[in-house]
Image 1 (spheres, rainbow, N blue to C red):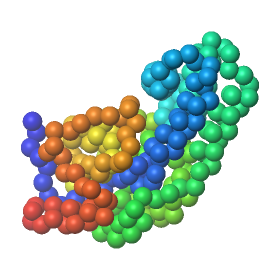
Image 2 (image 1 turned 45 degrees about the vertical axis):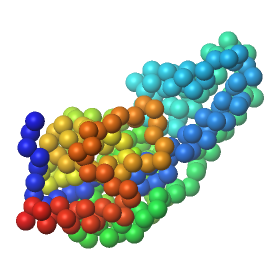
Image 3 (image 1 turned 120 degrees about the vertical axis):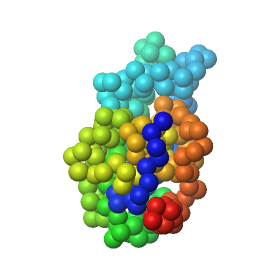
Length: 238
Ligand SMILES: [Mg+2]
């Protein structure tokens, strides 16, 4: 086990979906719509499980995001109905996917004030994964873009990706903390490369992202607690 990094933090990585803005709830709502639409054609099939299986398999081809999710819903609908779903059901699923992409950004409670409070004191990097165009649009709609030092929209949040980001921007890992809601994406790979991470759990977690940490990871109830956590970390290091 490597020593826990110490020293003041200079760069704060912030996750986007379900850390800065609402996201998973829209997927959950759409999935409910999908279930209701497809169930009459799918005699007793566990639709959530089948959709999750298809999403997981398709990640390699489609990547993360709404477009891949929409295609996976359509694929699952065709599969479980043995081709009986009609064009009108497929159209309804496409429309839901489009509505998700057009959805206004809803910042989570405390985000606007906290990000503005941190920006003069730390270099902020948005590190978000998913569809490039949609993530760019969400950032633009968020009104937060100006507050970030760098924006990283990536296709996977794994150790090599975090290593590359730190290297590219010449960030010392002992001066970096990643803040996010997903243990799998925002916490574990960051700890594995010897940097720090702060977990801010969200209400809903996508099954794919589900993972636990051992409880030693700093966990905040709200992003509002982040400035205080950063300040107390600096005080401990001094
Ligand atoms: Mg997230």
